[in-house]
Image 1 (cartoon, rainbow, N blue to C red):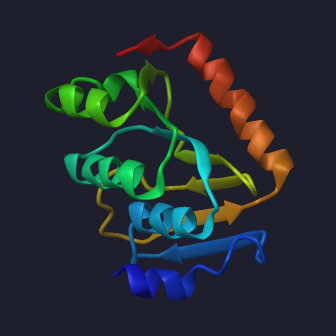
Image 2: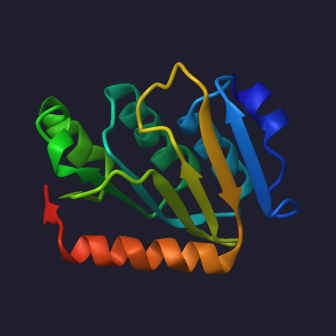
Image 3: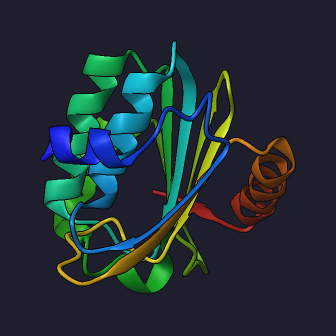
Length: 158
């Protein structure tokens, strides 16, 4: 799968805007390809309505593989009951887990370049067509970063 996704996603340094509407790969595949293209990732911040154990396992592996300094997760409060069985695993995978009123699915990479993904896919396995937009546009990155910061001020830390 990684090879297929790697062929689809062009290097972010040379392709500042990419969009996909597909069921051929998962969001964690996109994250893995982007991390493999970056020289480092100081901080990875992820927002989603919900998250699965499978997705969490992938992120746990990425932390070691790509030497990510900090990983933050924002989930919706309504999904908290659903993922309650994952709480310990989430705490061992993410540096910070926040619960807040959130339905957005955004991933931002504090790296060089800064990368943003805006997607329709929750951090779960999506077996249907999902939209994904990847960009290195700093204005979009900072817009998402500010929105996440605002969300953090109203969030409850797990």
